Length: 364
Image (cartoon, rainbow, N blue to C red; front, side, top):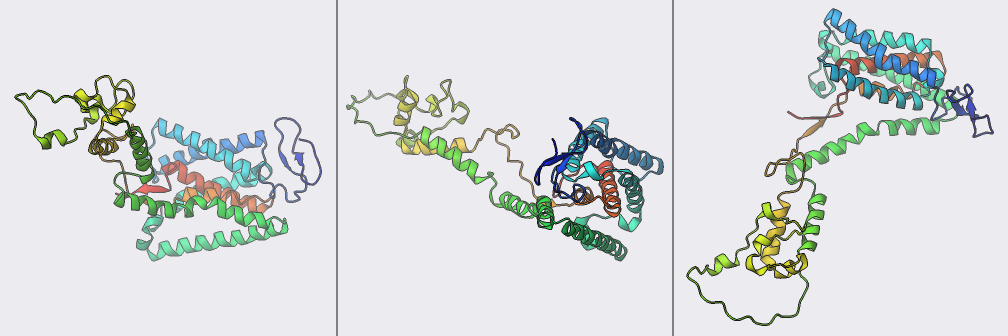
């Protein structure tokens, strides 16, 4: 990656372990979307996935702070997830150029300060329960919001000075898409739970289409009349003879045909799948399609059991909020590196104490 013209790349150091940034980037890499330095990333990853979480769990155990119990597997899962999050953040957040001792020091300041803050009784709250917040909780959260907005104003000004504000703000909207897109997704899911107990209609439609096509009967020339059958002692009634019988358990034979031989009786003989379709009456085809639609092949649903549909709600966790903010503290300035350390520390407190909880959670 040699130095080049206006849109080229420059090396932070030579060789495979070097970093890169745009040659016309005069803002210390802030205006470069992707940058990477292996050694610096290794230090960054150790801080986020090993040193920080271990420090939090040690302090939390010593002072018996609020946290979730985690098994060895839970810690391993959090470490592997955290490593992926760290890689994305480092690569897209310009930490290849800004990560240093300032971020490191204030990382542990933010981590430990937030550990103490959430131990205050009236701050043991969550965003979904905002209606029940005490005046003290409102005051602290509004003050924190004001500080975040003040820091955001400075970062927007620095983006303007670096001549990439036209990218900075749209990328922030894109980064928060997982949050605001979750609102219509939650509404759609809850609507489907209430009005679509059979699951998404598109899957049912496609399966019905396949069944209709497989049982479709082409017109065939009229068959020669057969001699009347000899009457026997057991003559079924006309209603019983006309009623379609579908044995779903035997619906697929060895040939893979969707039309079961058992339902055609003596009419089938050694008929092929296409010939079986011609033997079915309209009522039998309809009954077969409806019966097969009631038993889709889902590995995680037992036969005859209802679909696992649940209502969800949006629950924005603080690890998610500060992880998103950490992408935008990307400037090679002391104040920006300080903010980066604080938001990374708060992010680590959330993931180390409670795990990487999902944005959408089930309603109980």
